[in-house]
Image (cartoon, rainbow, N blue to C red; front, side, top):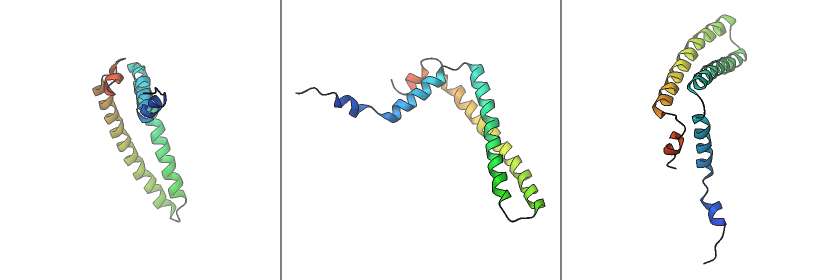
Length: 109
């Protein structure tokens, strides 16, 4: 039997490598950093969603009052959905017990 390094290349799962890197990186963050990142992400997400909706409604041939009402409605929906998603993320992070070796267990390493 001829030994060949192609076996290694064939057995590397690039998706798993990426996933393990993300978990590894995530596990290096302190609780304070996680909370800070979550808050920053929430604000970035809200702003991006609002900007997209403002741009979309701005292109519509609709009366200004209707556009303003739409933006007010969307703001409430975005706030509610963003908060709901952040709570979900917090729950998952808490359930994952992200100590320095948990990422290895999650990936079966």
